Amino acid sequence: MNEIVKREALSKDVFRMEVETPLIARKRKAGQFVILRVGEEGERFPLTIADANAEGGTITLIFQAVGKSTWALSRLKEGDEIHDLVGPLGMPTHVERFGTVVCIGGGIGVAPLHPIVKAMKEGGNRVISIIGSRTKDLLILEEEIRGLSDELLVSTDDGTYGFHGFVTQVLEQVIERGEKIALVVAIGPVPMMRAVCKVTKQHDLPTTVSLNPIMVDGTGMCGGCRVTVGGETRFTCVDGPEFDGHRVDFEELTKRLSVYKKQEAKAMEKYEHECALGDKMK
Ligand code: FAD
Ligand code: FES
Ligand code: MG
Image (cartoon, rainbow, N blue to C red; front, side, top):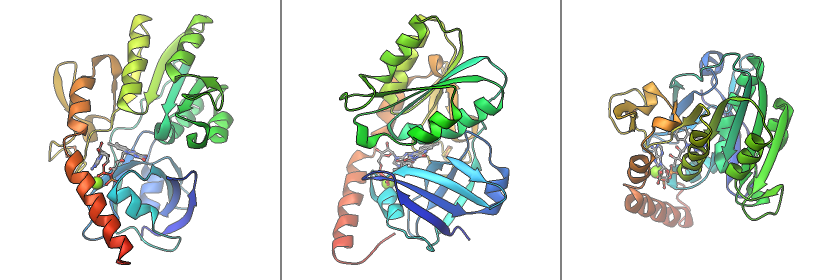
């Protein structure tokens, strides 16, 4: 159960894993995620189902190692098992024949964008994808997204690859050239999603964002993932993760995401110390 059948590093700290979990592989839809624990004592944390092979019974997870749990996961090898994995969770992406859809991914956000690009294309849309990262080495899934999109545009903040600048500037260029855009989908760091919404609001373009608040149970019980959308409290794990970006309170989300920074840093420090002692804690 939950065996890692394939593991590869996409960059210094980004990993792709194929995990054997036939029921989830069959049932999952674009936009959904799993909540997992690396080991019995581990914390629960969410990762998007980046892809799935229903016949082979596997799902693909793509994640950036940013703290204790993601580093612990990255240390598992092919043949190891993830202690537990619950899903598919969350509402699937709403797909219909919109027309031209612009899909924007920033940093590790390109991983959760991948199944949405695929679903939008399969749903009969013309898909223009814009992906960006801080620098060339951090850009992921370029070929995969190119293969699924009608057009792919790339940017890096430092200009080492593609357009020198932000994905929002590339979006502005696409708008300026007169594209008739029906929907914009943006996934990435909160400041990036917020900036995309600022641009699309000016042009009155419907915009969906996929939110990433801290989650614990993933079933609407703990309230950890609450966000404010259009003045109302919503639970991202059951009502989302996708919401109308123009109605999201990004200010509150930013604050809530950093509430446990001290504890997270401490946990990472302790984990590194234990790893150094050779006691691989999960
Ligand atoms: P920590 O040091 O504990 O935390 C680092 C930062 O990650 C925190 O400051 C906080 O902003 C965030 N975080 C911490 N704990 C949680 C938690 N329980 N839930 C959500 N965020 C948390 N990351 C990927 O790399 N790939 C994905 O496909 C992906 N999909 C996600 C889908 C959803 C619906 C959500 C909500 C988040 C997703 N994330 C994804 C983010 C991922 O869950 C966090 O990076 C991870 O939990 C960090 O845990 P950590 O212990 O390694 O780091
Ligand atoms: Fe607990 Fe959403 S994660 S309510
Ligand atoms: Mg953590």
